[in-house]
Length: 108
Image (cartoon, one colour):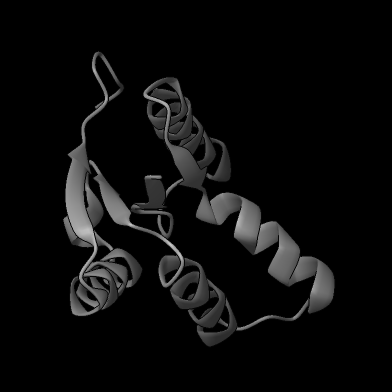
């Protein structure tokens, strides 16, 4: 079974924009028949447990999720995100296959 962790830029974007980017990628990979881990959903879980969660709290949860995946999908613009670069490095360290997602006809 293929389990894909989505990784991309959040900081510096409007919440609605990054959530749409991640939702579109999630729908694409689900349509391919893959299980998908969307970090937007993980963030909501972290905030429910700890409303004053730090960046490190989010990254710790993301790394736990990555460890249960087989692939990481890097969303367009991931290179400008410190968190996405860390997630990619962790995924590579764990031996996950790296994929690149580029939205067709998306906003620029």
